[in-house]
Length: 269
Image (cartoon, rainbow, N blue to C red; front, top):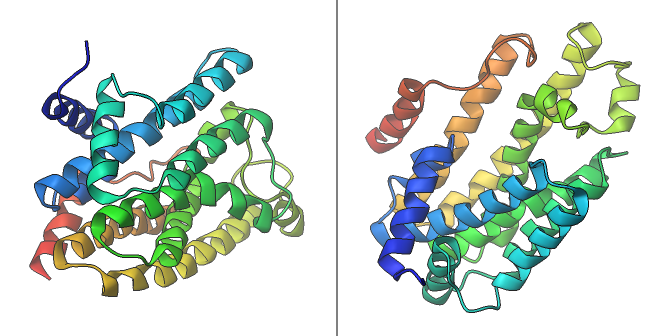
């Protein structure tokens, strides 16, 4: 049975609270309509990730990802598609950005290594930059370039944090030429590893600083949302650095109290 729009939004917000490790803390400061719309974008991105990272055969994953693409043009029925269709109508969320998320999921089925950062950046644009582009339509700005750059910075931090988890999936996102340049032959703690990761951290910070220039085009609550996202990821990056980039045995994730502290500091400012 087709869900009502209110029921659909309630469901995607429940999903966001339950599954989003950082996203939920940023959007809590948004007005209701924007908060619900961004939760609908998250629900779509989450579904893409769950399919791409799941245990189904590759052909079945590919079929389901293409179904998600087709759902953007179909009559909505489930909670995610109903909420997303309404959010797209209200805020003009670009279809291209949502399609890019699907393209990124499909790329994960085919490609497990990236030769250079330019190669990796193209992937990051699909799986994270596209989320930024979709969200800025909700925030109310057309600065898609900085939204893309900020999304890339967050994905670079994800890649650093999730090295071990991704390796278990058979994926290595760190650029192959940079692994070779720093003399990293295995993904393990050592001086070469720390030098490589320090280099990755600096790149992520440069992208974040440029992406945060987006804030000047946003209203106060949207700017607070975006700066909260950035603050949460910066906190994880700081923790990685403090742990000597031991992303294999030490936790780099922030506690709930630390995350709420980021939100509180943003509200105070």
